[in-house]
Image (tube, rainbow, N blue to C red):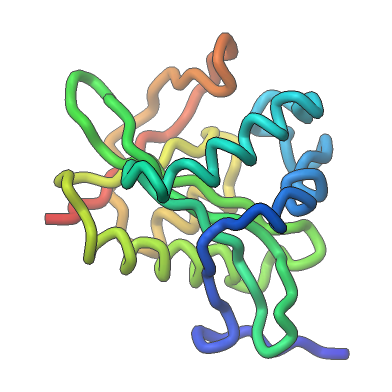
Length: 172
């Protein structure tokens, strides 16, 4: 079956308890190669609970990326508050399962999440910090008109530093 990808076929829906399995699907060496490698079961469960709490605390929102009309869950996208260089900002991150990469899904999903954030933003800036080696995520930032501030050392996961690009988008 051929899946046609366009703006109307990509939907983002708030993260729910039924999305835990998606974190396990995304937790492969290939998917996590720019993020410190696969996480333990304990970390996955903790991340899932964090995703559920973000929206309730009004400090961000995680979404499941779905292809319609199939209701096929293919990734995640979200934003959360972060203090970066003494300023509270939003940070954004995303993942798309390997078999669906290269079809523009991440760009469409990030764009939709940005639209939600713009309506509800308390802060002036949105940042993304993809690894300098993650060409696909850096391309998403470029396509969506983030400004490249420069390279930075970024801690992710806690205790592991990586060289990242600091991309910024002005929300207000």
